[in-house]
Length: 212
Image 1 (cartoon, rainbow, N blue to C red):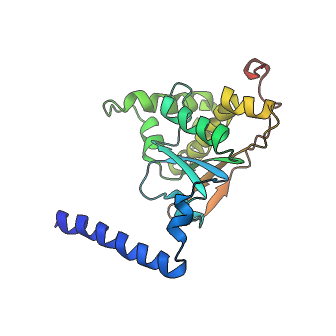
Image 2: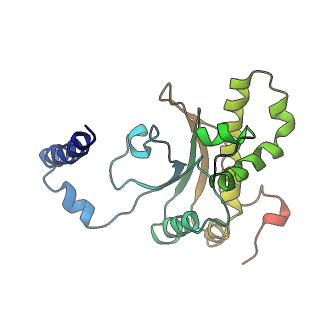
């Protein structure tokens, strides 16, 4: 049964290639010539949130980084490497942090349960809870509190993006770079724009503003 599913993936790939070539015989050659996507997507690793598909983007249009709960951790060299390449080499114009309602990582951060090595990652999400403890604990309904925590987590990750030297240096050089925060509804398919946007570092606390 498992191998049948595996073989089906290979067959699906062949059908997809045939479909794309039928639409445009030069489709793959164009992709092979290079990429210049306008968007970097930082999203959750959740299998229900495929970046390209939910925004109707084609291959070559979105540079993607995904991890548990769409986190921007300032010591995460994987994320920083992706961000640096996207901003300084690909010259993306938009960076979108996209969370989703029902996120397991965010849910786990609301509990005191231990999940193993991932506890170290979840601790960063718990910090977001601590920052917004008063607001969250004034929400009586657990599902509403959970949804709000998802939103606040995205907002904090966008702020953390704005604090990075990579992003601030791009702004310092006059590069057009816009940061956005979204939440995707797994049960509805609809994206909510949280309207947390940065085009420069002017709204950051003074201590975070870097001089170059």
